[in-house]
Length: 280
Length: 315
Image (cartoon, rainbow over all chains, first blue to last red; front, top):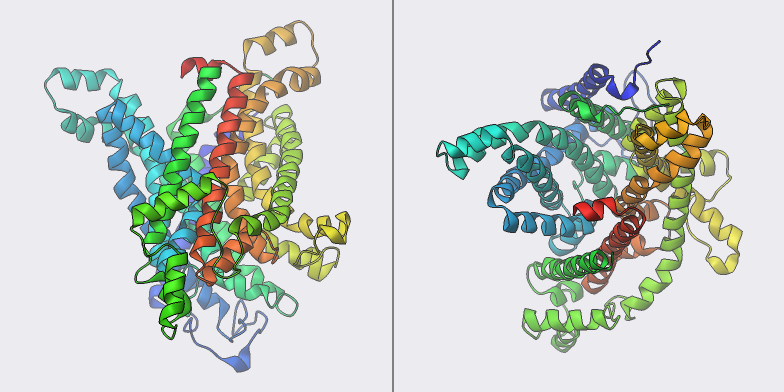
C-alpha cells in the first residue's frame, strides 16, 4: 500500500490555511461596523469578569469587553502587518528584479543588504528605531517593512535569475526586447509565485513581531487595543483571571498557523520539488 | 578552505562595519537635542553642556562616529548615561544570564528536534510522522512570549514548580539559578524545536534518497543503522546551518522572553535603556547582538564548508 506523504497533502493545507486567514479577515472587517461593545469602553465595576452571555470572553482589568478588543486587535494587527508587507513588496521586489537584471553589481548589493538585514532581527531593528523615534505603530511598520524588503529582494532576485536563464527570455532578448521590457513582461510574472508564498510567511512574521513589540509597549499604543498589549496586561492578573492570557495568544497563534499553512501549501502546490522523497 | 574562510571573514568584517554605521545612523535620527531630551527642559545649561560633551554632540557626526567606532575596536562600548558605568561592564554582568539562557534553549531545542526528526523520517507517512509535522506546524505558530506566559500559568501559578520571574544570581547556587532559567529557555526552545525537527526530517529524507544509502541497504545494513550511522551524520549539516540562521530569532525572542520573566539579561537591559532614553546602552547592546548573529553565522558557514566541501566548490 502506498502511504501518502503528509507534506504533499497540499489542498488540505491550503484550504485549512485559507479558512483561518478568511476568518481573521472577516473578524477584522466586521469590527469596522460592529463589535459587541465599544472596544475602548472602560467599566471598572465590571472588571476581570469571566466569560458569560453578556461578555463572551470576559472583561479585562479596566472592565473592557475582551471579545470586542480582540476584534479590533485583529484589525490593528492586520493593518500593521499589511503595511509592513506592502512596504517590503514595494521596495524589495523592484530591487530584486533590478539586481537580477543588472548582474554582478546588483547581485553584490542585494547580497550585502541581505547580510546586513539578517544581522538585525526585525524586533531588534524595531527596538532601535523606537529608541530613536519613539514608540508607535508607524515606526514598527517602517522597521518591519525594511526587514521584509531585504528578504523579498533576496527571494525575488533568486527567482528572477532562474527566469533570466530560460529559453523564452533569451528569445525575447534576441528579438530586440530591452531589459526593462523583458523584466516586466516575462521575468516579473514568472517570479510572482515565489513572491506570493514568501509574502504569506512574512505576513505571519509581521503579526508575531507586532504583537511582541506591543507586548513590550513599543508598538500600537493604548487605548487602541492590540493582541500583544492585551497579553502584557493579562500577565499581571494571571492569578485571578488566567483566561485573559489565553485568548489573545490563541488569536495570534491561529492567525500565524493559518498564514504558514497557506504559505506552505502554496509553496508545495507551485513547486512540486518541495515534496521530498525518501527510501525508508 | 583557507581562501573560503578568508572570504567569509572579509564578508563578516564588511557586514559588522555596515551594522555599526546603521546603528550609529539610526540614533542620529533622534529629533532635536538628545541631551535635552534626557535631562528635560528644566536642565541647567552647564549640566546640559557637560552631557552634550560626554555624548560627543559638540563635534560633527563623522568625527563622533570615528571616535565611537575606534572605541568599539578597543572594546569600549561607551559609558551609560543612566548607570554612569561602562556599557561593557553592564553587558558582562547581563551576559551571565543571557548566555546560559541561550545555550540552555539551544540544548533543549536540539535535544528534542533531532529525535523527533529521526522519528518522522523513520515513520514517514505514518502516525509518528504526522504527529511530528503537526507539532512542527503548530510550534512555529506559537509566539515564544505567549508560550512563556502559558508556562508561568501552568508551572508557576498552577503547580508552583518554578519561579514566575526574577533571577537569584549564580551566587545563590547552580540549581536555584538554573531553576529560574528553565521556563524561559523552554519558551524559546519550543518554536525552535518545531523548525529544527522539520529541517531534520527533510534533510534525513533527502539523504535517504542518495546512492550510498541504497548501496548500504543493498549490502544488508539494517534500517536503524542506516538511519543513525549513515543518514543522520550527513543530515546534520543543513540542521547546523538552520541553527545558525535561527540565532537571530533566538536573540529577538530572548529580548522579549527576558522581559516576560523579568530576567536581568541583555534583553531586559536593552528594554530598560529604551525607557530611560539611554542611547549609548541601546547602541552598544544592539550592535553587540548584531555582531554576534553575524559572527555565529560565519562560523557555522566555515564549519559546514570544512565538513562538506561541495557547496564551497560550487561557490
